[in-house]
Structure formats: structure tokens, C-alpha cells
Image (cartoon, rainbow, N blue to C red; front, side, top):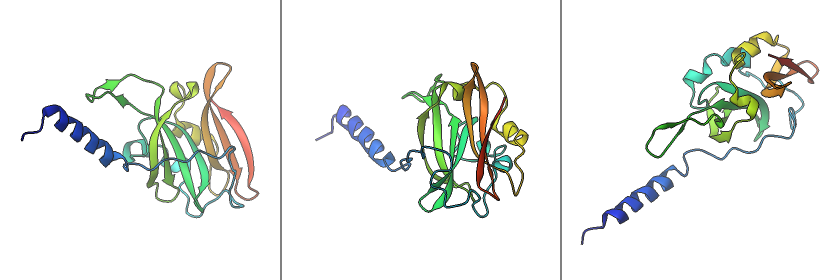
Length: 184
């Protein structure tokens, strides 16, 4: 007996959902504060420095959907990882682009290889939605980050007097002291 078209379509949709259920691992929530849980140092061995990878990463990695709007160094499962936030494009059920500036992607990547550990959708903050001003790469270049110190351990888009700015947390790799600075 032939299967009704509706039943076949439902079965196909369900199969697609089940097949994609394991497509990306869930992303754990970030620590409450930058540097929480660091194992006594903010300098992982063989780390990729933000000023070295921010320019090329958006075009080369599945971790990034579009412009980078934030990053944070985190201690995760006994190793360091970069948490990256980026703007992304949302598509409707027909594959058409939907204009939604709040839609973003958040990914955890290995600090050495930048291999994607997990990725998922996220809602961008008001400051992250406003891509005017300097890019993450430009802000990293202006930060003064230079091996061996200081190291950028967080870049966040925040609102300052109604305008989006970059708030950077830098770590002195010799003392593990954190300092915060703001760049336009």
C-alpha cells in the first residue's frame, strides 16, 4: 500500500531533525567573570593570539558567521578555549535570508588550532548589533597586545554614552594581573 504524501513528508522532516540533533555540541555558559577558573596563568602554551587570528578567521572558520563581535579566553575541561561571538545570517524555512540583526553565532574553539569544539546560535546585545566603528581586528591591533605581554583575554562590544565601543581585558602574562581598557 502506498504511503500518503503527508506521512512521507513528516517522516522526512523527522529524519532530518534527528540527523541534525548531533550536529553541534551544546555550548556551556561562560564563567561569571573574565579569568574565572584560570589555572594560575592566563598564558596557555602555544596559544593563538587574537591580534594574529582575528583578521583571517571570519573567512576561514565555521566558528564565525560574520563580523566578530566578541571573544573570551576560558578554561574549559582542563584546557583553554576561545569563546567567539559573531554576527550571523538567519534563514527561513525556504533558505531565504531574514534580516535579523540580533541573530548571532557563538563558538568555542581550541586556542592552538582554532578547531571548532562547539557552536550554536546566540542573541547579540545592542552593542554587538551595531557594527559601525572599528572591527575586532583593528581594536586588537590598537590594544598594544604583543608577545609575551599583554595578552587580550576578552574583547566585548559594550555601550558607552549611547555608542558601541570595544571593552578589552588584557592580562599581564608575567603577573596574571588583568586590566580593562576601552577603544572606539
